[in-house]
Structure formats: structure tokens, C-alpha cells
Length: 602
Image 1: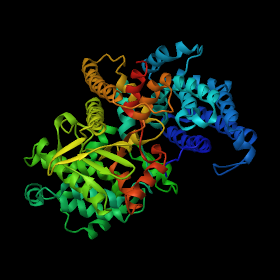
Image 2 (image 1 turned 90 degrees about the vertical axis):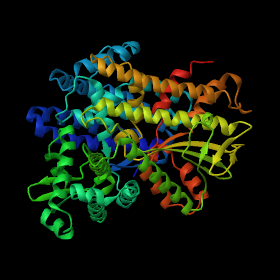
Image 3 (image 1 turned 120 degrees about the horizontal axis):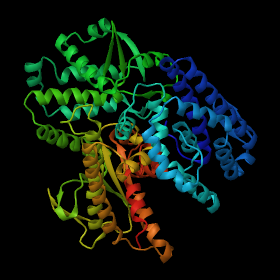
Image 4 (image 1 turned 90 degrees about the horizontal axis):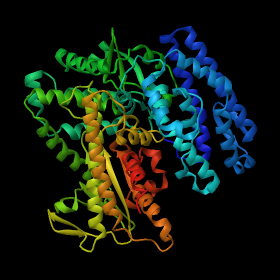
């Protein structure tokens, strides 16, 4: 399940991440040879043994099977102990020696690392050359001060200083831990690395991503299209995919093998051409990722699927007479890719497809809320008041929703990573800018005025407001609570030293969209009312913090999981605000970058 962040949980994340790292090092041995494995094993062994020793001695805890039970005294002294952990782990000479070996052997992009060193570490007086795995230490040990403000000012100051150092390391360390070690990826330009991290690094969480939800979404997306057209021209279509998805719904979470012959007996109506089309489409996606099947085979017998990192999200993978099935919550993206291609080849334009999908998906989301008897408002309002797909009201809260149907430009190839990432970034920035305009109208005297289907005015009053961008796809690690913010901040800053003219132009395009978001942010700040308990000198910082934490990027499947636990709007509010928003797929994303640029104003 997603972590509910507390200082205690952060220590657990430390140990869990180290355990997962061990698996990656073992996998790397299959690609890199015994020498590499020796280095990786010694590095890992030193790190994990030192961490366990510190945990047991400093925190006065019992550590068994990576589960930590703190004593009462250990919990009381957590502030100073965490700082000691950070400083001690960061100072292991043996560890730095091992990391230097990684550097000498060329297991990182030298130009990429040199850029980050030049930009960040010179300002902090660091004399040694940090390598990518060194960044892993900082990121795993840095605790976001936003979650731990109750621990005291000195602790927060120390952590914020460390965050400055770790900020840009987040990209280096995550690519190294999830892609660089034991994989065949080696791009000269960092943008491709970031794209692959964001889209393809997805932690499988079975209790959050339900196959039944994925199937409902699939049916909602493609119900407007005439299945007979697809059947006539390509001999397969929606019914084939629904049948396969229904089969996947009863599969166990994770990866498993099944005989093709057994699957065909259960679905005799699916044609040979249908099977071929699905397999070919999936193979096309796999080529873009360029990762062979062997690592997946090694994971089939794993009991704890929650730690499996999927580098690709296949619908099906052919292996002689066997198919590897991934449950429907993770094959949804591949199904959409196949279906979108099929519709395009049958005469539907991109705009036609997205328009039909959009109306159907909006109706699906609205119906979900209305089944719970939520007070839902949908319709058209003044253009000057931005755009919202739906609005939900309660006595305490107003929720604004903007639904994003796609995360990448369908016209680009799967291998054109920067175009896809540009499309994703623009879409998220655009949705937030639109809702900021709607927020200003809600806070005004005239209110947010809906004109169709009937005239309605909504006012915020003293209620809390939350803006939610509802995303259709999983977005890979964009919903990972610890790293997405830093990755996209670096991307949005658009300061990569790329030699490609195309990349530079597209980065400028992303930058212009985030500047638009910044403009809307500054305009919205002007209508906020200063609370009585906030001093004038603190107000500039406080108002940006308030706006930032009203921003939520939530996956549709996560929303469905929350609604499953709710009977009414009161339950929804309780569930929504009870959890740390990071724990179910939210993050500050572009907002954090905009705030960083804007906080110097005033």
C-alpha cells in the first residue's frame, strides 16, 4: 500500500528501499559480470549493515524482516537520531570508494553528472566528485520538511539545507536505481532518461490498482465506438479486448504464466488475426523500451509483488507456448495504445477519438459521484472563468475537477520520448491554470457562473477548495510520492545543456506553459484574504503554501479505490483529508517549480 508519511515510516522506507536495491544489484550481475556484482554486493552489504546497526543502536528498536518496532525512548529522540543517520551514512569512506569504482567503470552518463555537479555542488562546498549512487544516499535519507514541521525549527533548517543538495540528485539517483543498474539504457541526453523514469517506472500496488476498475474505464472509453466497424476491417475489436480484460480480472495480482492453448479454449471467438494484432502491438511497445524478458521471468515466483518495479507494461508477452499476463490495471495503457491505433486505421481522426472518449469519460466520472449521491455540478461557464469538467460541493469543501484524457501526443512514435513528455507536462500545467481561473471566480462576488444546461452560481465562501487534475493513465512514477516532484521540477526549469536543437525548442515550449501557470498563480494570490493569525511579513510565503497544497494530481483508478470505501460525501471528505495526499498518488509537480520561482516576489 502507499506509505502514510510519518518520521517512523520514513525509516521503514529506508530499509525497504535498500532491500529492493539488493534485487536490482543481483539482476545487474546477469548483465555486467562477476566483477560488477562483487562491487555492488560489497556496497550494498556495507550500507545495509551500517543502517541496521544505526537503527538498532540509535533508535532502540527491534528489527526483524525489515519491520521496525521503535521503543518509546527511540521515538522521543527521533529528531537527532535521524540527523545522525543521515550524516553517518553519508560519511562512509568505504562506500565512497565503491562508488568511485562505479564512476571509473563508466556506469553513469559523465556529461549528465558533470552538469549537475557544476550546477549544484559547487555552491555547497563539496570537494569530492559525487556519482549517481551517492545521490541515492541523500535522497533516501532526506526527509521532506513539509511532513515534519512539528519536529522543530532546527531540524527543519537542517533538512531544508539537505534538500537543496538532494534536489537535483533525485533524477540521477532514480535513473541509476531503477534504470541505470542492470539495464541496457544509455542515452546521451538526460531528457530521454527522465521520460523513461516517469512513464515506465511503476511500483505495482495490488490493493490500490484494481483490475475491475481498469475494465470499467476501458468500457467507458470505447463504448461510443461501433465495434462492428473494427470487426469488419480488422477482424477484432472491443469485444476481444473486453474478453481478455475480463479474464485478467480473475488473475492473481502480478505476473504469471499461462498456456496459450488454455487461454484460447476460454476465448475461442478471438480470431488468429486478433491475437496477432495484439501481440504485434505489444511487441512494438517493447522495442521502444528495449528490455528483454529475462528479468520478468526471475520475478514470477516472488511473493511480495508490491516491490516489483515494472520497466514496461505489457498487455501480453509471447514466450514460445506461454503468455505472461499482467493484471488489467497495468495493461490498460497498452490496451489503449492498441485500440487507438485500430481506430486511427479505420478512419477516425485524433480529434474525433479524443472527443468521443472525453464525453464518455466525463459521463462515467459524473455517474460514479452521483451514484454516491454527491452534489455534482457540470456544464459550461464563462470562458473568462476558466474551465472545469465538474464541481462537487459539500458544507465544508468545494472540489474542482479537470479530467485529462491522454498523457502523450498520439501522433508521435513510442520512441519519441521528449514529445510525449512535453505533451504530458503541458496538459498538467494547462489543467491547473484553467482551474486557477475558476478558483478566482469562486472567490469573487459574482461566483462561478454556469450557463448550461441551466444557470447556476457557485460561491466558495468560507469553505475549503481543492483542485484535482484527474488523470486517466497511471503516469508511471509521476504518482510515486517521493520523487516525481523533483524530476518534473528539473524538467520544467528547462535548463538542460542539450546539444539537440529539437530538444531545446521543445523545452522552451514546456517552459512557456509553466510560465502561464505561474501567471495564473500570481493572479490568484492577489484575491486571497490574509488570515488573522498570519503576520504580514509571513503572508507572502504562507499564501503560496496554501495554494500549493490545494493542488492534487490524482489517477482515476486511485479515485475509484477511494470511492469504494465511501457511502456519501462526508465519507469522501474524511477519507480524502485523513490521508496524507502523497499516500494515494498526489504530488506538487509543476506547482513546486512555479512556487520556487515565485516565492522571491513581495
